Image 1 (tube, rainbow, N blue to C red):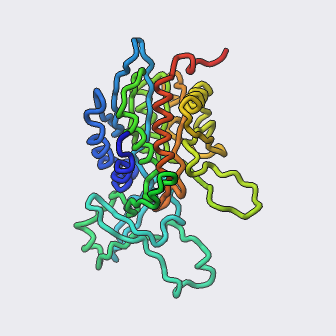
Image 2 (cartoon, helix red, strand yellow; image 1 turned 135 degrees about the horizontal axis):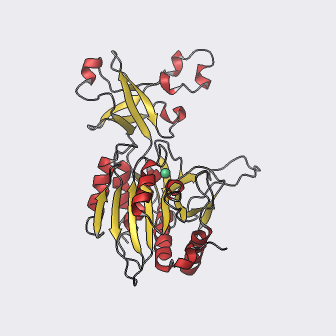
Image 3 (spheres, protein in one colour; image 1 turned 90 degrees about the horizontal axis):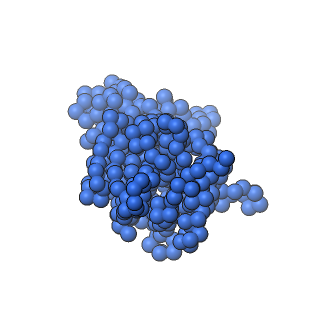
Length: 356
Ligand SMILES: [Zn+2]
């Protein structure tokens, strides 16, 4: 298998909020050039890699997707003071933003989202989370003239977190980084492209998932697949709770790829769920089910294209997604690649049929 950790490190450190995925796309393109028969970039910026199957024609066409974009912010105003007022891009809330180091613009200008020191808070101010309108990015400029050469209105920002290995233990290899949602899915998809399958594989690295599954919608139409699998980095809430509280975690770190049965965007195709269960059982790969039925993924857009597409989502559990730093277990990533590869090797038309 390719060095997935090295690929994840590069992708996690790269800059790519929704609508500004070009640096991530260039990086992925360099990784998969030579692995696909043909590459295309569509009008939205989706990167589409075609890899013909080894089986006899007519072959099934399976679209496997992962989104390149991450949550972040966009500069809306440069104040006379040199402070940058900004809007959120995707689901990032004020709790995530306070006192965080960020980079802004194509020169990756470093800055910090400022916050009043505790000495100056008044009344119950220290108990409240400020509105995003009251926050600003400070790039250390004397005034707005100092900002001009570095940052302009419309520029994007992301968290400044660098990738780090937290545990080298092969039984529990954990890493930390930003944008694991969904650079871990992109990494898994690059891993899948190392092999050729009986079916035609169309690997799609999508744009603008975090602002409403937008890239996947048009990519699904263009590819017109027989089945679709979205690869994700998903919510993981397995850290200790109150001792006797009966709370099931959404997913658990290290417990294998998480299969979505239903979320707010999709009821997964039962045949594809069965396919993944069969593949996991045959290969001895641990799996878990994401619950409860929260969130949405690119599958939600793809399964509604044309006359409808059987679709399912498989995800790597990531603690603290949509924050400056997430943690994941690399064994979940490896097992996600193994699971989807095994599914691509055994998928047949019978898995895609609906019972009468
Ligand atoms: Zn995602």
